[in-house]
Amino acid sequence: MAFDDAKGMQIAFEEAQKGYEEGGIPIGAALVAEDGTVLGRGHNMRFQKGSATLHGETSCLENAGRLNGKVYKNCTMYTTLSPCPMCTGACLLYGIKRVVMGENTNFVGAEEWLKHEGVELVNLDHQGCKDLMKKFIDERPEDWNEDIGEE
Image (tube, rainbow, N blue to C red; front, side, top):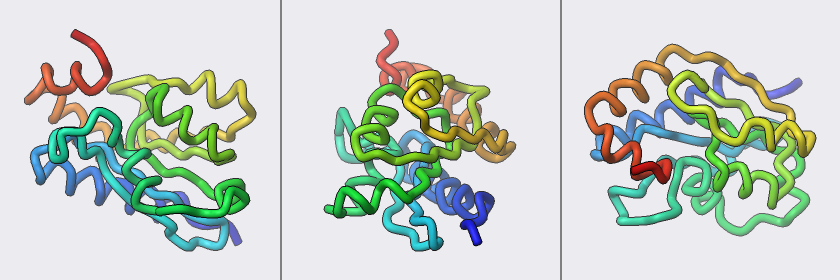
């Protein structure tokens, strides 16, 4: 039986909420194995740690620690927002074959690149993810633009 996408997204959303409460960007992620084992979870830590690279997905991979390369091949990356090119690249580097995103209303990342590389991409159109991200963008547009490399 496959892991329930709603459960995976709930973990990612909890991480996004945690990031927001810490004063950061509310993007969360969870790396879940085929059998439902949560291998890692994390949230965007750019402001909390002064990092240029700790987006939700990369924070999640960092927290998962070193894994054998074959482990990633049977995992799903749950992320509350359409993954940016950096996070897409990390998923592709490790051969993650499935990405489930909460939403792409507030931001459309490198979805076409994922699809082109044969990654199964699922959009849950999660209202909570949309609302939390919009709230952050409305409150802190300059910080959001910094996160996505805009001026």
